[in-house]
Length: 200
Image (cartoon, rainbow, N blue to C red; front, side):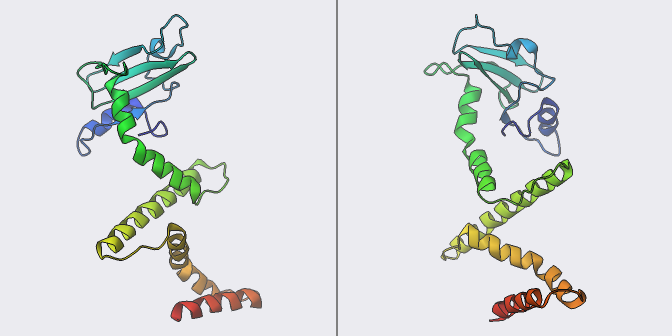
């Protein structure tokens, strides 16, 4: 996970039933559960050094890759000791995160390239827009898998999103066409033309 969703209580909760999941994640330094000594950028601290903090369920690591940078990660997968890679001198938690974060980065990039987000000051709407983005990407992944399994070539994601939009808005547009009396003739014409194309 990246630091959008990360906090210590969530990590602790996911360990137990019904989830029973371990996670490796970057965590923002302003979270209240991080000891101050791990996030203070002490000038005397050497580059490439790591500091560890432990709880019964998780390990927190603070790594200093650059002079003015501290990286903090939380893991419920690594709970025994602060293992350091002998070759790179980096914690194993960082190596695990780097080896598996590709899917998160790809997903974030797909959301940025084609998303349903709109500017708003209402946080529930932000969550709703993100849910729409996640659902559309997940549905495209399932669609592509099913099509490839049949030996066919899937359509592009842009074409898929256009078709998805048409299907999701079809019932609403039909209802508007039948019930709204003050709709302009031009708009009615466009709606009818789109339905004729679907029939063809």
